[in-house]
Image (cartoon, rainbow, N blue to C red; front, side, top):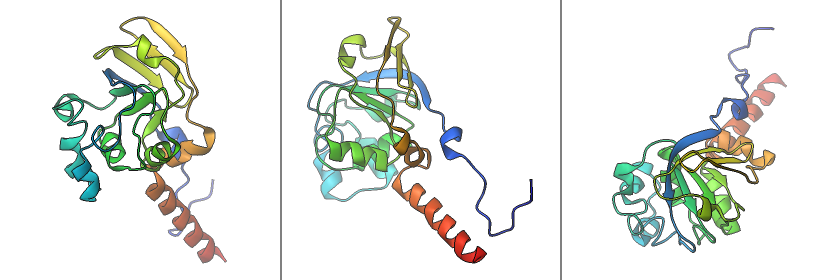
Length: 193
């Protein structure tokens, strides 16, 4: 293996480095949880707050007051149909910063796109997931391979994993991380020419 020059991008495989399996407690929400007024208060969206430190204290404030004081990295948000209605990303920024994962029965395309764009680990199209867990159950979720395990109830399911085409975006922390890597690669190619 030849040494890299100072202008060479690092030889990394970000998809491999990410911890795709989260182990933590279940935070169960219902169906039709909107982004504004459900995931975060509307004033966070209207105020254009995009700094995780500003959003975290308000995360799930209207659906689960005090959530941010009880959650810990690895915990899993489990929701039903139509989670995060509205094409906003504020709440996903906070969820990703806290090291949480999201498993839901469905979510609108624009919400899914926003969550992936923030680098949040998400599994959607998880039929009847609300029926197999309760608040506080110990869960293990493999977002890369689609495995969902409820250790409290000894239930295992296989759901659609994160698509291969989106793994790199999530591994790099979302769109901004992906763009930084792309820009570095472009700059490297220009320097090599």
